[in-house]
Amino acid sequence: METLAVAEAKAHGKKIILSLKGYTDINDVLHLVGREIYVLRDQLPLLSDGEYYWCDLLGLQVMTEDGDILGELVDIISTGSNDVYVVHGGGDKEILIPALDDVVLDVDTVAGRMTVSLPEGLLDL
Image (cartoon, rainbow, N blue to C red):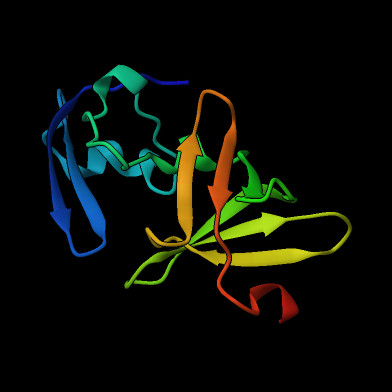
């Protein structure tokens, strides 16, 4: 793993343009194209109450307000209007849960669980 320092970062549409310290010519960083970038946790901005990084949500056990376990949050789909949580239950069962305040009642990352109130008929689909 190679550690690089960021000189500047700016949004460009749905992407981020990074300038790296010590690199002034784009040809010097071509070997980095397509590689994954990791950020140290303490370098991430603090979030407001009720906001979470995706990495904190993935793997949470999702349950209803009645205590019924729906499964594990395995993916998050960004739709533009609101995110959608992909929950895998037993077998091939997949539940798509809208990330809305009236649906997601509680997120407890310490306990590893999310409590939801499912819209009427969601499990019937």
